[in-house]
Image (cartoon, rainbow, N blue to C red; front, top):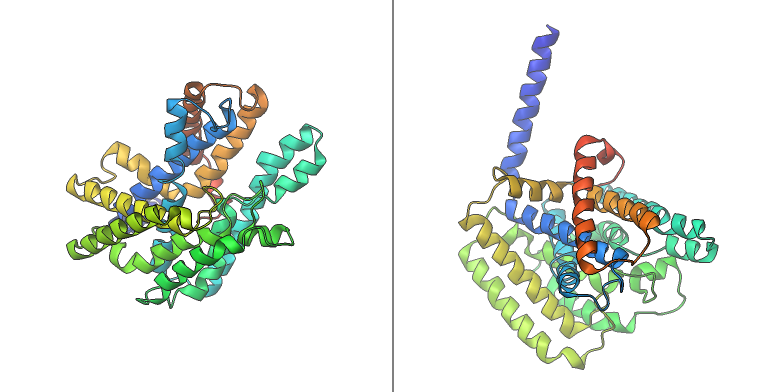
Length: 352
């Protein structure tokens, strides 16, 4: 009887897994899986390379580029797509947002505060505890997403809102008083990497386009419109680049953000076309690996940062060339994958 029940349970679990796999949109998983890989490799350069990626060699430069345009904006865009796909209620989004915020600050304590406390720097330890990273951005957006879910599909609201955010954000950056809450929204200090303004535009764009792109393939007519829109946005953004203020990669103004949005759209279309034309599915071991990274993105982010912190405490921060730093990044990615696969860490880290 026990054997029969066990076999029934295994059969049901296999059936549920099969249904879930059929519902997955592989090109979006590939987009998100590559984004987390590029993020990890970029972090290796930032943590271990001599200059922290500011004046690195060819390999370091490539990894820094891959960790910017095809990583964070693409990841946030895909997050917005899946928010619209979700059937969860408003309070579920609020709870997930709060969990992500909490997880982000716990991670800050582990990767920043503890090393600084060990170095005897209490002031920096406290300051870096409130570092605003992508976990905090995702957390705040999940909380505010309940305001946009009913309006996101509106033909005019979201484009106009995105335009307004990109136009107004430069005038919000750094507004006093500088404190953890305002830093989450529009901070400009060294402890702020992803302020809500302007980064909320990428998940908003994902929500807006979700009904067109949240399928196994994008219809031809929608694909043409997306490509044409990207070309127009990229061209206009390039020509008005110097007309609107921007500070850096984390705080792009209107022109630079339009160019970045254009890149995200074109990059998405390239991955979608490649995935469908080559019939890329998890049956291919490499694609299966990338898809697994997509489904475990928060676990990978957490575990890889903890590993980088441990490694840097042992061998030192920013003490290697870009090639060695890149090799260590690959090693960290392998170790992270194995830890997630063979432990239960996914039970304690909230999903984005």
